[in-house]
Image (tube, rainbow, N blue to C red; front, side):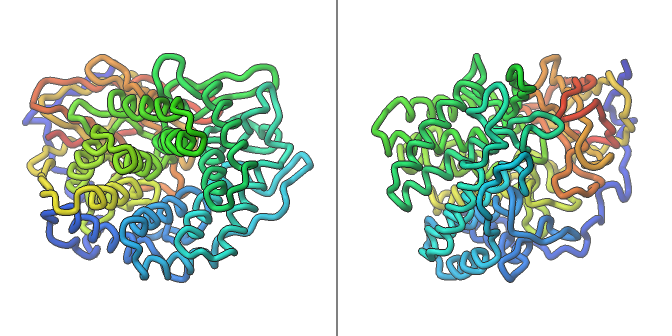
Amino acid sequence: MRRLRHSASLAVVLVGLLAGVHSARPQASAAPTTFAQAADQAVKTLMTVFYAGGGMWNACDSGCDKGNSDWGADSLTYALYLRWASTHSATIAATMKALLATAPSYSPPCTGTTCSSWSDVPEWDSLAASREYEVTRDPQALAKAKAAFRFVEDAKPFALGACPQIRYQQASGGANHLKTLETDGNAIKAALLLYRSTGSRAYLESAVRHYASVRTLFRDPRVALYSVYVFDDGHRCTQLPHRFFASVNGDMIWSGLELARDTRDARYLRQAVATAKAVVQYLSDPNGIFADLQAENDIVEPLVEAFYELASRTHASFARRWILRNAAAALSARAPNGAFGRFFDGPPPRTTVTAWQTNGGLALEIAAAALAPRAHVPVRQSWSGAHLVADDVRSMPALITFTGEAIALLGTLGETCCESGHARVFVDGRETFDRTGIWQNKSSASKSFPNTVLFVWRWPKRGAHTIRFEAGEPNAKEGDSFLHLQGYLVR
């Protein structure tokens, strides 16, 4: 096993590794003193850095394509809706009108062996169109939400295999036979939003049916969390354990709350609360900040939205504390232009920030302001004075030992772009509860981004710690084993 040790003699300042990558970026506003100010700054970043105008979102804060479909762009629409829900801003309504004009229109469902889209994409888009309808009340938005939902709901090639009650991501299973909860988790939420808008019980019945199937096949057998992947080879369905994406767990929390209200069945509320409490217990670092999710193809806004609903609708104090605690921490993980890094307890990003990475931090500030606008924000410069250690880690197993209170691992996201290649991570001898570990080669923007923060872990106080890397176990989604770290920051 390769052993690496941090010490004063090994600490090397890597000129150019992190410095100056975005030196031309506009500077962020002064550090906020209240969550209201933090949210104002987040909305400014959303609208001046990521909104491209003309009803389109930038996939990154610089150098990426524009679009208005699928989960990266849609996550920004969701965050914008979250702001509108508490402010009813006319400016946001005008932007939603523009987004509606460019939102995709789905054709009738496919009936053959192929489809023009993967099944999760229309569900993400249905949610965005429903949110645009709530803001604009434009019938075109409702029509687009219905068509996107129907594209999957009535498509035969997705509902096949040994467990047809959950849908394939690709028609007839594609090459990997993957069924992702990004399809059915979003479908439940999309159906409930359509039920809210139309009153049609067919949507409520669909949500109830799919919710039951998801709990049977995606729920972890021991904890109240949902793994995101099931493989269905036509003979049996096998869950890939402990891939606890924020998006799908957020969906299930939100949908449990909504189902409890729509059906008056309190079991749904209990299930939603149990999942939310499991997120707090199992998917936080020892510093109490949400951290245990290391795949860049996930989005965190749905989880923030779910916790906000818990805090505002049911007055759950633990959910309110989770939002305020994470929102305060995330302010130290902002780039100079206001874009948030993926890890709320991490250092500020000094490289390209994608929509997939930043939506969670933006949503946190917006939600915190809606809950406690005048609350004082305890902004910390958590990573000032951190030591930058140059190390080339590309063989496994490997071990980093160091003394400190936090570590951030650095490398190129999508180095071998853009899917296969991951590694297992053990912190102080224990594998991360979310076993995604570091899925380094997955880049949702289909680009390679050097100097990216790939993993962060933080403790309440200074101590001696180890981070061990083991080869990733190959599977049909995450691919083979891969890791290439170029250094790490130790606080």
